Amino acid sequence: MKTEITNIAARQIWDSRGRPTVEVDVTLAGGGQGRAAAPAGASRGDHEAIDLRDGGERFGGKGVDSAVEAVRTILAPVLLGADALDQAAIDAGISEADGTPNKARCGGNATVALSLAVAWAAAAAEGLPLWRYLAGDRPVRLPMPEIQIFGGGAHAGRRTDVQDFMVMAPRAGSVRRALEITADVYHEAGALMEEAGLLAGTADEGGWWPNFDSNEQALDMLVRAIDRSGHEPGEDVFISLDIAANELRNGDGYLLPLDDARLDGAAMVDRVVDWAERYPILSIEDPVGQDDLPHMAQATQRLGASVQLIGDDILVTSADRVATAAAAGACNALLVKVNQAGTVSEAKAAFDAARARGWATIVSARSGETEDLSIAHLATGWDAGQIKVGSFARSERMAKWNELLRIEEAMGGEARFAGADGLPASVAAALRR
Ligand code: PGA
Ligand code: ZN
Image (cartoon, rainbow, N blue to C red):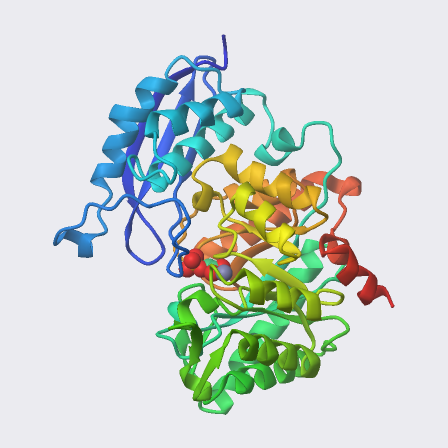
């Protein structure tokens, strides 16, 4: 059998923060090869798959020798001889060999690199780009990018309480055009920051590292940057926020040091509703913490008709958590991070659970990345509708944007940009009015 796995190699490589991570190579009998590397989060939910780290003194405890060893001694023996085309069986084998609910034995970093590498190898064996292999015969759209302009929170020494200030261009018509518009806004924002003496460098995902006095100053600056770049805020370009409120939890409320505010859940919801009413905001991720379903439901109820409410730390790419949140009326979109689930199939199950409920889906990078291109292919091949990679600088980010350009080119006349249709139906309809 040409697609039988004949070799699995694992190694330590380095991520975009200079931290160790796991890379896996998979070789098939017919010569097909696949390679993938694990990303790493900085604002992680407690319910996501565990990254196995060595601890101790070396590399700040972040070594991955144990995870690499787990691929070699626990996972590879189970997968050698298996058919790479049967991703479901591959991932079931990985989960079974790990034997824990959160990949604690082998590490989600080990399992995600292996699972993705098998998908790449299978696509190679079929002579297809990964996105096409994943799409099968279904027509798919290019995802609308969500791109960071200012980085804050855990990605920039907590210079702003809100973690990501991003832009979306739902009417761009193509990835190519969406990236051109983003480039205009990104560079204009940098110039404005420099003029105002507020620029302190770039953050973990390539966005500007700001010296703002309040979260609203960032929103004001972003609107000005869009405007001065020659695009119309709330028409061509919209704001998307990742509050990453899990990081702001303080007792049973939330602490926003920059705004000198301690808010209970209801007041936190009031705060984001107020922002959404006063700024051209199209999308808000994690406005409350990972277990605060009641307030996520409140936010969804108040804003969901015209704003996308994304669950990241609250859903952690889990089909079960999607079901629970949906039953509570919380969220209308799922952030999909394969390493939160640990395998491609488990991430896809969460994706399918979200789509079955009419939610939007956003395939996402982590703040710690490598040159791995998997998410550009997953977002396209699964027809996710949206993709979030970080900012518009640093090659671990640009590699993904550039890959989307190549995919768009390869589709030729068939290429369709998801645009507003990638958003929850209510939000897309509101945009059309
Ligand atoms: P992380 O953050 O990769 O640092 O966890 C990204 C996000 O919150 O979306
Ligand atoms: Zn997030």
